[in-house]
Length: 139
Image (cartoon, rainbow, N blue to C red; front, side):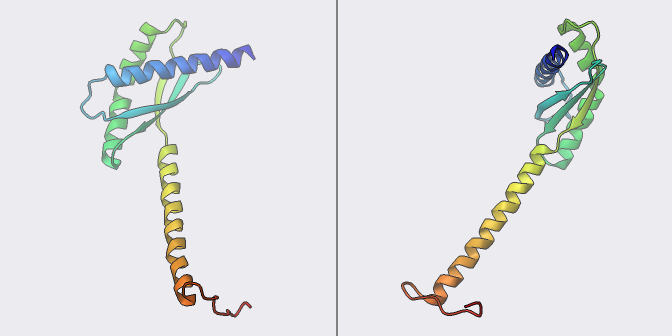
């Protein structure tokens, strides 16, 4: 239990520091607005998989990921100066698709609602307001 708690605490610390480094220290013009979503680390803390969500269109996201990949050594160097652990993990930036997937699901659901609303007025106008609905084949 203590190992998992320590692992979680270290991962949270890495997430916070990397978010600060990305927002304040990296001066790459390709880097747009990037949100650090989460950090996953194995028990030995040898690698930190940093899940990020770059904003913008596909080209801007690609450029941001290239800038992050290019700055991995710089980020690791700054982490080594700020963290009190014996070893500093290798840095691996991974684009998190969770926000994209959530937005896609929202768009699909909004389309369903639009389709439902389009179907409702047809049923009301066929019967007319206050009149019983005409019989259907199902009745």
